[in-house]
Length: 210
Image 1: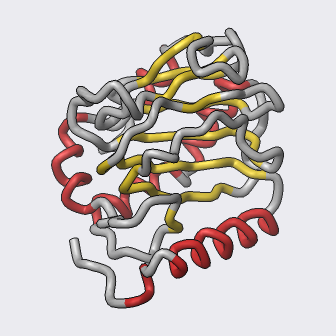
Image 2: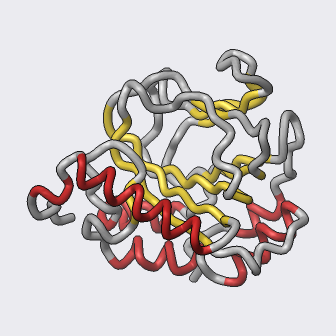
């Protein structure tokens, strides 16, 4: 049984204001959330962490394998009107948020489609809610997405795909998947994130188990 509700994804209209994006609550089916919480990498550092640095369980592995699969690629290709089969995918996970995170940016030019899957309990904080922005003004937003478990947020990257959120400090789990323009970019980003993780002390001792 699929962990992802691709029918819900296909039925959700693509939004075009201010750029191509859509939000799908319940993209990850509810019956799998408990296992995914258990098996999510125990990231206890801020920043985007490449998969494999922290131990992750079988349910999380299964989710990543499904996200890499041809059915997901086709669904996103059809939604955005672009053949993504020729683009490699890159994955990172976030576990902790710093007050300095969430600054407004459009994503790097090497990214084609950005996918975020949130894995947090019902979100009550005012900060940490991703905003889809019409400009570099955080109050000039078209949509606001609470990072609640199972919610998908995705968009087509452009020079004006501005997004960000108000400050939040604490646990804020998010899986990020990108279709990118070439494997060299993936190598560079994985290397950069691993060096950043090392600098934060991830490799100073054995990462905690899950």
